[in-house]
Length: 551
Image 1 (cartoon, rainbow, N blue to C red):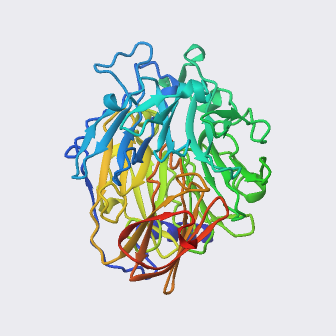
Image 2 (cartoon, rainbow, N blue to C red):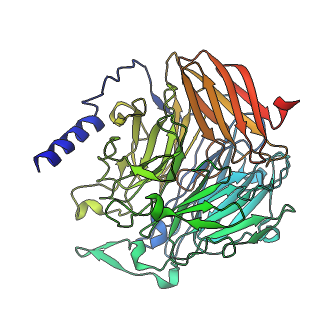
Image 3 (cartoon, rainbow, N blue to C red):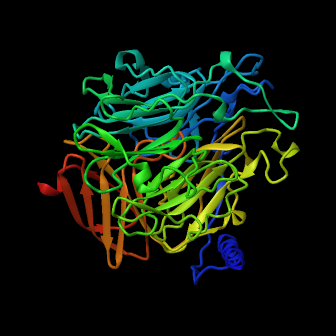
């Protein structure tokens, strides 16, 4: 017992910044909430009416996307809509904001034709038809929507033609070219078999509350194979990813074992998580139990929400982080490089998360020191939780964890304004002002969003890389990028679908620390082509076209 108490004390000191293991890098860093001054007047509305419909709990996602190809990130925010006995004062719709390059975003939703009025949950984006412009896929409580980019600032709904409606309650979605044919495929997580007609009344200490996912059956996710002609085919069963008991919240593609084939991790709420290993023949095998990422260390399923893959300790292997429900830790799994993961949650300083309900998550190098930090969006689902549980609150602070050179993370949330107290859900990461540091977009449930501009001031260098596929898919989704400098190495993937029902900047950002010159950049394309670019200047946004180094 003394040993356990000592371990918990040390963990507490680490995560609260009382111990830093020599981490004394001086910096001036801050986030500035620029939502209002940027012109974003969006208000998320979940249709709550006091009936406590289960669908109201999960919130919605958001995205940084460059829909007009001007080199500046635009913003898409997903919204819900009225439910029975709720009556919003304004029309509740999704919104697209165009970046005017001067710190202001202009609402172009109506002109662009992307203001879906459905009960929106998530968003992912990719150039599914390889025409050079990103398209948008929206998940709903109801029929999903695929918007094809017309390349003139407008979109057209091609859902019916493409056959990707998926009329179940969908949550997250991600594009990835799992079969290497040069066209991105689409995985959609479907949540629970909840309908307004099978709504249940749940109580806690005689207080009306939202039911949990355990009250409803799971439903299978859907894998759509891109046919290359603008249509998709449902290959869920033939590919080996059919599971009727899943309660999928988010899915992320990543080649975790570095064999050249995209694998897939699926976060499930209250049931076992899936890690689908790509067999290289169009099929997958769920190896989550073998790899050690199916359940917690006691073998219990978690209420998993958001996920991210990244190399947090710069050893070349992609590690996994998962957000979970209250009284469940947000789990950090280190990739051991042998197909297995080790639970490093406590040793890395994430043992403080029990009071929180966590959703959106991302590894990102906040201070450009070359080690990826962590941002976590928090907020409870029970709007009256304080009446019967004094250990937590409905509105919760978001968290920023600074990476201590790959050894552990320090919770520095109290030093910065991270959006205040909210019921935060989806989070997206990207450099919207192109100043070399990563900004954060948060979609808050039943509230206004937060656009947090990163205003750090350090002497650290950086590079951001945009890839353009030719033999591979146009966005280069699935590319593995490796950056080398003197005593420096870092790697990252190009990825569609991230965090929690959200979409990050498709450009890949690397903090370089004190590295003043990049010796070499390697781009490992899904096609098998490897581009090598030598002697690259720092502090720039660099575009690399597939095959350009081989001419």
